[in-house]
Length: 383
Image 1 (tube, one colour):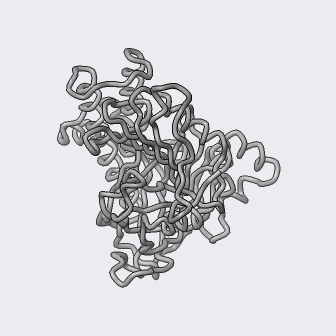
Image 2 (cartoon, rainbow, N blue to C red):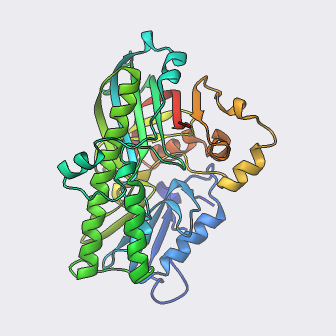
Image 3 (cartoon, rainbow, N blue to C red):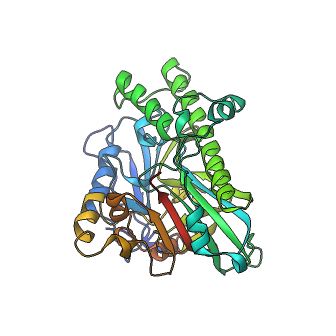
């Protein structure tokens, strides 16, 4: 379903819905003919185009169907803020740390034994939130990874493509993917109870209230990733320096209106990481500004799902034992003691990360800087 995003083959997938409200909406999917984009995701883009005031939509190469809203997409409106286009996990994103741990001394067995107690509440969570001026809603979840596709992962540099890659090839790196946990859910639930999926207008009371809560959730999510990294490194006896932290669920001012990103990384905040599945490489890329506007200054946030969670369980549970999925083709380890989740998040359920990045590169949207190989991926562990 994709089209080439460059040159003479740059085409709009759609010009919007059937009614007058949506007829001026442009929908562009940035994905080559080599990339598989499911029809359900395209249909969800069309449905979103029927919302009043949606002026432009861009799907990225990791586009896939979500719960009513396509993931891996950006939505721009001149007039409205739509909270449901951001979703419940406001501020979800990726952080990357350079750690003091060296590959030479890294022992997977030792590290794996030390990674316990990461689901328990932080004893000083309330104090941390108060010091940051943030609400204590869901404070018991601060510093925890959560479920779904969230994780913390130790990696090594696999390859660098540019001379100025800001990575130490002798060091272990840490990547954290998590968000605002129950706070974001509470914000969306509050909005839906009052407004359902109606758009809000910035400057009016309801719009300003949501934007203020949204911004709190963004800061909460950033603090959460930092707390996860801190306790993760504390368990394994290291420390770290944050190299980047990028949110991919947000709404921000853009071109005089509002840009909603749902599983889409910003192209105007410096370098980003684009992780594959837990059994594939992660790319560090540098955004290129020249054509960024064609993609609403947005980029893929990961490989993107190929199968739904239920489909992944159904396809894989009869073919693989849990022990099979605790090791990957790259030789890395996976800690996931939730039986359903380890099948739902198996590498087979995700698209090819190399094709995703190739599409972005061919579209002149990014320059690959480096790849990182997973050593150990942590998702959840029983107490």
